[in-house]
Every structure is written in C-alpha cells, then in structure tokens.
Length: 196
Image 1 (cartoon, rainbow, N blue to C red):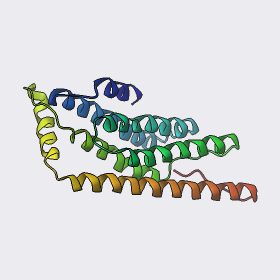
Image 2 (spheres, one colour):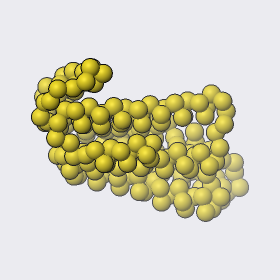
Image 3 (spheres, rainbow, N blue to C red):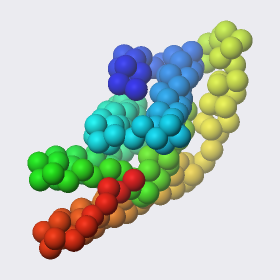
Image 4 (tube, rainbow, N blue to C red):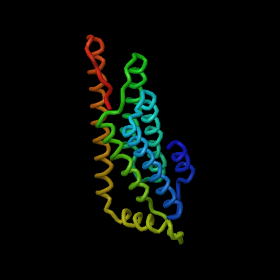
C-alpha cells in the first residue's frame, strides 16, 4: 500500500486520460490489497497487536492520496482538513493508549469510514478533466468508467464528499467514546476488550 501511494504521488498531477487511467488502476489495486489483507487476517485468525497498529498506519498513508486530489482541484481543502485531523487525533490517542498498555484496534465505524473513503477517492480521481489520447486496449474499460463518472453532476460529488466527512467525524466520536470507556474500565479494575 505504501509503495502504491508513492507511485500515485509520482504520477500526479496527470494531464491525459492515459496517466489518469494508470493512477486509477494502481489506486484500485492498492485498495483491493487493503481489503484482502484484512479478510485473510480474520479468516486465518492471525490478527495481532502489531497488525492492529501497522494496518491503521498503512491506511493513514493511503489517506494521503487526498493531497494530489487537492492539488488537481477535485476536492477543496476544508473536507481534507477534517479527514486528516481525524486521522491525526486517532493516531495520537492510539499512541497514548499503547503507552498505557491499552491496544486500540479499529472499530466498526472506522472500518465503515475506510469502506466509504477509499471508493470516493477513486471516484474523485475520475473527476479530473484531462486531454484524451489513444489508449491501449486493456485500459479502455477504465477509460469508459472514467468518462461515465466524469459526466456526473457536481452535486453528486459534493454529496459523496460530505457524506464521507460525516462518517469520518462519526467514527472519530465513536473511537473517542471507546477509548474513554476502556480507560475507565481499566482504572476501575473492570475488564475491557479490544475493539475489532
């Protein structure tokens, strides 16, 4: 995932549908590996404390694709500020919790946030106006999908962006409540559980 994000940064900003298609293809592959990684970890029951820390870190690096989207004016700065602020707050709370012996895994709201954010970012890559050039046959399906998404009215993009922001803020509130509850149980001598 980290390597894929590096390639995306290297290929952006793009000017033609050729490089746009490659960015969308790489981004899609990176997102698929994220879901496959989580599925295999749960299926094979190899979820570990290290994984609970490293997987969200990789997700946060993946969220950095908002920066080239901002540079190419597919999204404005304020929604990105809210999304990145959430990521930094959660990362700080995770570090604080780990120092106190409390491992905070991703909750349902965090997984839902990721499930919504990743496709929306891919859709926003298709929102960029580009110069059409001849494409190899294997990129034509991506270009057709890109052309269809580009034809959507702007209110659909705005709805997707603010819906994503709403879920992001809800996941922050849910994570903070989980952290405070587990901290309270730990201090009061009760039991706590990792939030999967």
